[in-house]
Amino acid sequence: MRRILVVGSSGAGKSTLAGELARRLDLPLIHLDRHYWRPGWTPPDPVEFRAEVAALAARPAWVMDGNYAGTLDLRLPRADALVLCDPSRVLCLIRVLRRRWLHRATPGAAGPGRATSRPDLPDDCPERIDLDLLRHAWRYPRDSRPRVLAAVAAYAPTIPVHRLRHTRDVARFLDRLT
Image (cartoon, rainbow, N blue to C red):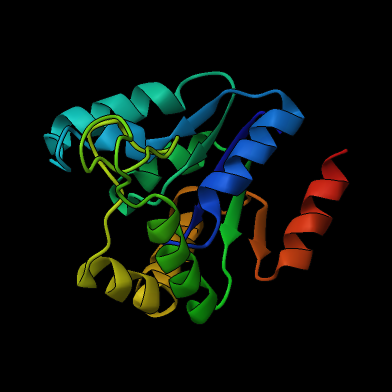
């Protein structure tokens, strides 16, 4: 596997797993959130973002995490494998809340009231939580997972799909790589 696409709900563990895959397989790591968001959580021009994703997907090797369903048509045909991080809704929500707590604003951290940075986000996008994010995490199994699987059927019907629902599934998947 030289190009692995990692998708899943917010709080599913995509970025953590992608980082571990990249480390174990010695592959470049691409966090799509770092390419999508502009300072202050500003979204990019859609045409420019698609062009950037197309260029990233054209690279010979990568582990790429991020959903961005509107670009699956560019990424899936280039991927050797799809990893669907698919834990329970409750676990995803707990992880989102825990992540917000861990990356909360701390006095003296890179400026007054600045949140600690996450490696999968640009520096000018401090961790945040809002109702839309929580709704998206809760509705992912109903709304987004079917779209991902439909995109697989449409753009890469022969790609291996590794659906990881539990921590033990992740551990087994990683163990098979070494």
